[in-house]
Length: 232
Image (cartoon, rainbow, N blue to C red; front, side, top):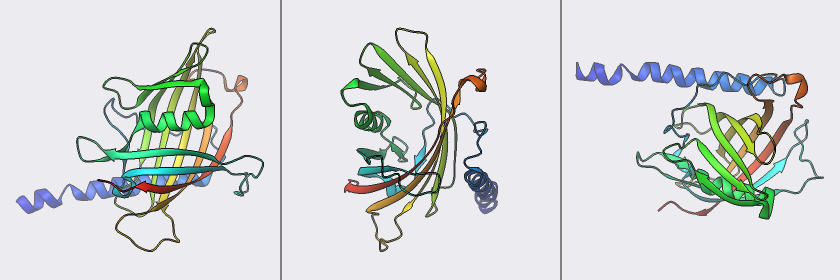
C-alpha cells in the first residue's frame, strides 16, 4: 500500500507538466499573434517562480533586441546587467527579485531609479522608487512553467504595472514567455557556465481598458547568462 501511495500521485503530476509544456509551446508558436494575455493561473502571495538547480549563482546577463525575423537589431546596443538566483527556505532555486529588478532598472534607467523594495510577505510584488517622486508598482498576476527537471525550461509570466506620479496612475500588463537552456556549445558539466535564453514579450492595456486606445508593443530578446559565481 505504501508503494502504491508513493507512486500513484506521480502520474497526474507528469501529466500536468506535459500539459503545461504543450500549452507554453503552443503559445510560443502563436507569436506574435497574442491579442490577449494567456489565461495563466494567479500565483499565491508567497508562491515564487522556481527555477532548475543549474540557475543557482550570480550571473552576468547580456540582452539583445531581436527583429521580427529573429536577427539581432544592430541599431540597439546590448543591455548588460547582473542576475542572481538563490535557494529559498524550501531549498528551491528562485530569483533574487529585488536584486534582479534593481540591476535591470539601473541598466535601463540609470540614475532615474532610486531603489527597489520587496513588498512584505509578497514575493510577487516589487516597488521601484524613481526620480521626480514616481513609484512603479509591479505585481505578478499570472504564471505557468514547465518541469524544472528537464534540459529546456519554459516560463510565462503576466505582470501588472502601475506607475504612480503627479498625474493619474498609468496601468499596463506585460506578458513575458521565456525559454531557458544550457548553451548548446558547452560540454556537459556539473555546473552550467552559460545559459541561453529567448524571450517573447507583449504589452496589454489595463483590465477593462479599451484596447483601441492602447498601442500594443511586441518585443523579442536573446539573452546569454554567463556564470560569475558558483553556488556555495
